[in-house]
Amino acid sequence: MNKIDTIKNSDELEFVIFCIESIAAETGRSTEDVYAMLAEKSDILGSYIVPEYDILHTQSREYIVDDIIEVMKERGLEI
Image 1 (cartoon, rainbow, N blue to C red):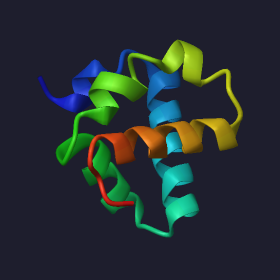
Image 2 (cartoon, rainbow, N blue to C red):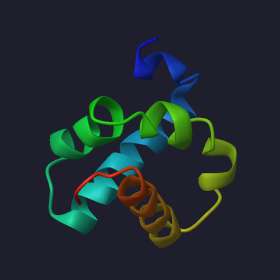
Image 3 (cartoon, rainbow, N blue to C red):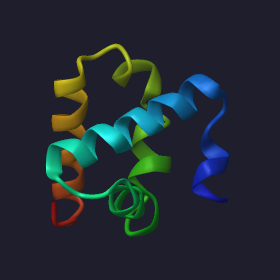
Image 4 (cartoon, one colour):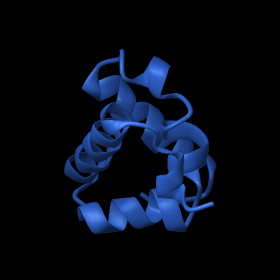
């Protein structure tokens, strides 16, 4: 299954875009690079961000970014 297939509606899509853009801004990486890390080099997009949307989207931007970056580090991605 393609990672984008796990997104069920426009709210989840907007949240994924928000996460990618926010992580890019925090780390100084391009949005393309962040997307590749979340969807191609790992399955964080499909196995964490989208499934945990209901919980994550209620948190602050800072919490979301810090949480996802921590998951990225735990899964061996260089930030």
